[in-house]
Image 1 (cartoon, rainbow, N blue to C red):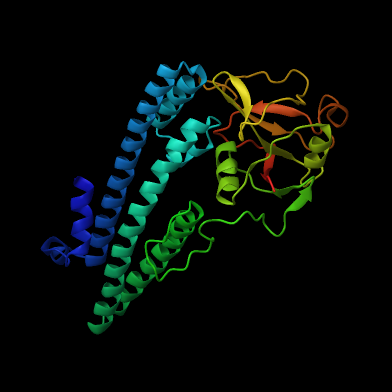
Image 2 (image 1 turned 45 degrees about the horizontal axis):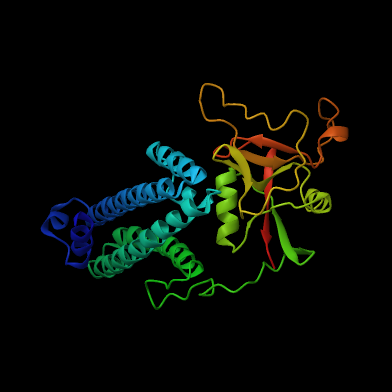
Length: 323
């Protein structure tokens, strides 16, 4: 109800409190920020509620891994974790709940942005008519900023199989998405792969692969492991293996029939001063001049790390498309 009232406020003419403010644009920006924050809070609450229902269903079905995955996600969310990050959970039931919550939030946010953009456009025109050039420039700058954010939201909605909230904005991704890998991907045994040289967390890497229509790479044998090792980058790279329910599992739920752990791995070490244990996996690259005989022991081997943190040695990730 609070969110509905906040959205209605943006559809009405600017209230007297805005007119009385020293800067109508600043008041409008505050109104938008407050409403979008409320929207995010309600989306997170809805997600937590849906997770609780899923946990109850898992208990009734005797699904131990499902219960553990839900409890871990509720803890992560309670610590301020991003709603989007739930999509990267290796447990399919949790990822599905997260995707539904993100879709609902994005659609409401798209509507809110359309209303805000209309107000900003009106502010630009009224400022010009009043010969307030500086005010017009500020409003135009904010208009352009929000348009870029709106374009990203529309693209994400289209990728999820929905429609952009503004019919005048052409989505940059087909809806529904076609099964096509990026043009710069490399084919290997009927699948496509792409190395992305970015320093990000495991969570962010997998989410980016998802947004491109794929997933973090899963490896089935030594030949594919060598292919991924040589695909790009001399530093370490994230792969699609993550611990869920106390054991490592591939992000696409394929069986873990092949592993190539480095010496002493996985060690599940805990971050210094915290209880969170290493739960995501990276493949070592072909780095030279490393300690303890790196070039002989480590290239292509796997190491478990903390998936919610960036790592100075992990400077990329590999996405895979199963076609």
